[in-house]
Amino acid sequence: MKKTIKTPRKDTSVMTVRRMPGSPHRALLAFGPLRFPAAIGRGGISARKREGDGATPLAVMPLAGGLVRGRLPILPSSPLGLRRIRPDDGWCDDPRAPNYNRPVRLPFSGSHERLRREDRIYDIVVVLDWNMRCRVKGRGSAVFFHLARPGFEPTAGCVAVAPSAMRVLLPHLRRGVRLAVLG
Image (cartoon, rainbow, N blue to C red; front, side, top):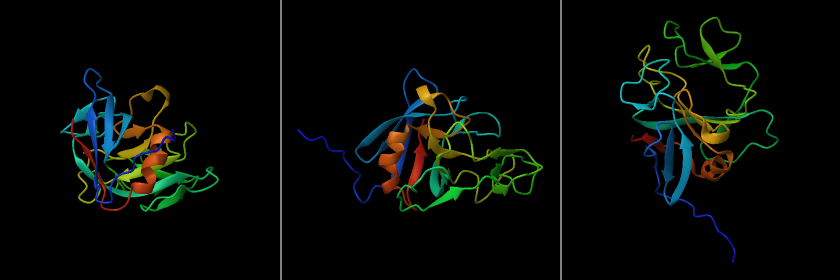
């Protein structure tokens, strides 16, 4: 018997993330008929997200774009549009900086996160529109949907899935899709 993978219906526009009972850092991501285990922030899920708290925001966040590690030989296909991560790509997480919660070029004098990482969790990154359009200093930055560490270790506030799950999801991710962290 041939195994087939169910794919989301065309009208699917929301991925939902719900914390798994008894596990403050693990969640279940659902998109149409698809279900995948996910890692969430070491601070759990919070409706009052703050910079550095390690919490995943309780929010509905539009997908803002995608980034892919340069070492991948072929860019994965996604209607979202993916850009290669350059060696000097970073993300500002310094609430005092004018570029707070924005991409920056390295070297950068303020506090920042390097997007080209050796641990591979940013080999594929979907930028979530958390605190981006109407930025509030200190409300949290660099909230991404990315690849999980082995064992689904907690994130710094992002949502993360296994590489195999990301490969299944990417062809269905487009502008207009939102990631809803529901608790």
